[in-house]
Length: 166
Image 1 (tube, helix red, strand yellow):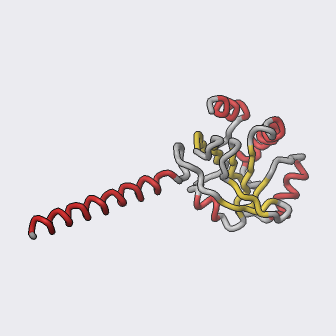
Image 2 (spheres, one colour):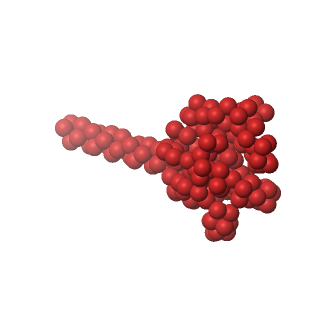
Image 3 (cartoon, rainbow, N blue to C red):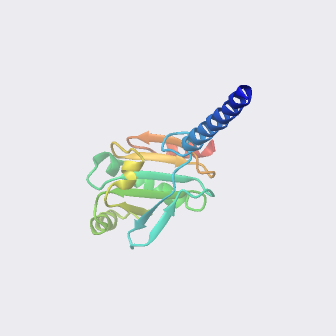
């Protein structure tokens, strides 16, 4: 009888331990660093329409930025060109952090930019992605895995180089 309880206890322990490893592995699959699957999220565009981001299918370039940020302003002409040139093959989303849609729309219009912008009015998406400074850019492959993350200005050539390796 004692041997039976011991075996049952051992089996139960092994079973629970296995679930702990499965749960840990599942938790490590999604994240905001290179090698992790991007978490799905929704954000509003400048027209107030909800847009879902992170579904597998096409590669994504996500650029977190703000109108007041000098390095962001420096990279925006190239990002605008990139978004136009690669729109058929790459989803480009510029995620503006904590600014009003009116202010962002006016900034884009005044500077002749027409890339897709999503609004993170409360900063929740930036917080979820652990954005500590802007600009920060992520490249996500067609399977939804983050392949590149850079804080600081990014060039079109850098993005092309990363995307060519996907």
